[in-house]
Length: 610
Image (cartoon, rainbow, N blue to C red; front, top):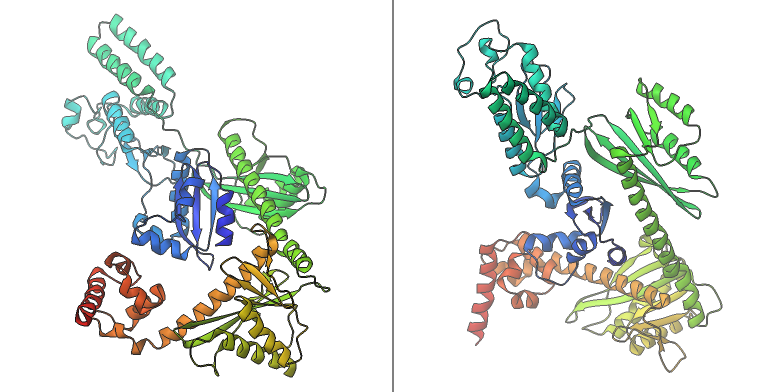
């Protein structure tokens, strides 16, 4: 949660798409936001959530995000990311739907105007996407009134003359099936449709006005009236028409941002008119120019991938641009151009990549500063506070866990240079202590661990630079007795009391009270919390291994799997007894019938006891 808390502090209040990840780094949920900070933070606030969101939040170990310019861009990118990752918690959205486009198949002799949800390089022209369904319906309705284009699926020409359908009689089709219009005249109308959908309204309106005037002068009043209606329909839709002709050419976009000896190269890759995916590269640059960094990035990236786009747009011209273009042209098998766009949609894409690169670099540098403060800086402060002569390298922390004196266990976690060294973690079952005696348990564990070090046992050979035990002065004394009994009383030893986060040191009558913002205290609390988590997990697993003896198995609809799920979620039977129906039903693997059975069982138990 430390990673998440730090990221939440630095989230921008701008539109974007966020990707929630589990402990294995898998994307488990993709969402969009108008303000990333507000939306993402809401997942981690102590507010009422539905069972699905509760389950999602329990699995989140990290998250990432991509900045965009508008909410519409966020919406479109969200759809693409869901298609790409198929996240588990987006399962209700995985209907494989795309936003609709208007399609005109230019390979047909008499093209039709249709709606599709897939853009393909098939020679057809596509217009869209249309985010709002009402806009698509309005455009199609306007088209049908302005242009008498055919809607049937007949393969034309087929060498036959057919009887015109009702659409011809209503003036909504030129009846190419009956030979009422030539291929040339029909395609002239299709060109007008393309102008209309491409947003070239002014030229089209001017053309209609000229044709209407000519028809009126020639006393072709029916034709003039038809053209007048077209102009009116065009005017009504002019302000609303937002569809744009998608550039179906593949393009790659790279932007570089530098600060000190760090650089970020942000890649954004457009395929078939969609932002398909993004990649980010961090580069160490000691005095190199942005042009050099861009050159290195392009060469390294394209040497490891198979696809090369025809157009590569960059924020700065790379060094050896001509050589790079020649190389990529050979790789692709056709001409590749590397270009710095000055304006238009491609410039906006480069600016978007720059925005994401700046954000990433800012986060990276802030994280590096925090990591230094939390590790090297914290260890230096801790050495000063504890008045130690030697530097602190290996810290070991111990914690005891039991439930009312049963299944007592202990954990040993190790931090090396201020960071967890999980391969060195160890766990112990308490063997000689009866009941809930944490002092005696701590003494036993430290005695066993340090004896193994003196004996040179594998995995225990190295002695710690500092031992931390969870607790107050009593725990410290129990731990010190273990060290002294083995002649290791000179090993640095402290305890950390939870309530006030006071640090007790051997030989000092009063505890050390560190500032709450102190990096040293932050390091101590992290290692203490990690020891507590490790001990609790071991203790819970021991209890779950004994689930066959649990009272939960007496409840209808509760078998070993559900009993384990309940104990994993609530930890004790007492906690389950105190939970309400909704909380029990939210446990993974439970349903409302089984949850009701649990509630009824404990209620009847209480009534019988009364």
